[in-house]
Length: 462
Image (cartoon, rainbow, N blue to C red):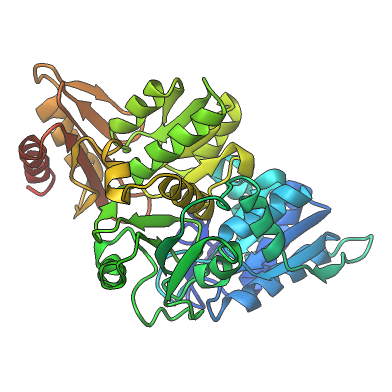
């Protein structure tokens, strides 16, 4: 008797569908065919009758976006293509038009990657717990069985609408820069979408803009479009000094994050930017709630309280922050990774709006940026340090055991492991996608911070 035939292996997209988005190598992990299935699944899960799409400057982005639109229109949805745009420009369209959206980008990842950031109407996030798992399940099933049947009512329509000027006008309606003193600002777009949005947003303002790497090029010929890595802002820091500029701005690949360099060429921590913007938002809305993730500096909740606000500590990640923004009615939220969220921007993240706040704050007084941000940067921080480990759980447990009974230490596990003392704290989190543990440490003085950092790293890397 012949052995029973084994069923064909089921498609597994676990390596492609992450906690908050879709991201992987093209065409090894996904291609236009997969993108078309994602478009169909997006419509079925969200029930969207209309949606908006956008894409970055990567060579594969236009094709993937159009394939997604084919899948969506086949299910009867009308698709508005915004074409080239930043991620926060796509969020603008989702919020302003009241439509679900899909942005094709791999943010700061290398050229061979691409991805989809999806949202519901009003830029509400779609993550594993809010629809992404269901979308993945449908795409996996259809990858094995074939595309879903088209809508019996017929296909939806496909139209194009450029939203860049509308997006710029919305941002400039939130921050008034017309009366600031003239500033010289160097902007490093990293060959990403900042080269598309910055010229329109900053046009006509009292700014002398020195552009760096504004040419849209998804191969990133000058440096990775990830300003969180200090190696990628070396050129910006040098150019700020060479130009005698008042500050420098660096955007990541899809221009939803913005990093700041002061007039000395020194990086301004995202925590200091969070505190600065929080103080400005609280001046407009006294007593409001402001969110900060658990890796931002102790200075952030201190500044929020000093300005009459209520700080709320959250997990890391945009889907958690956006959900908390909606739940608490927060006016603003900031992360250590330079994601900044605004109630006036549908609770979505926009680095450009944060940059406008920094420009307005600096241009509204006479001192340099280093003096302005000094009061928001009060502690010694390690920055994020990654360690490759064979067993994340085992190493985390070793650190937990070592610190559990320390005098004065408190432990919490809101996101990874956070251990706090009277003059210091550290957080150790596992990466969702790589065999890494991420350490952030802070203390009231550099010596304590270094001692703390080195002790934790010794346990992690043992």
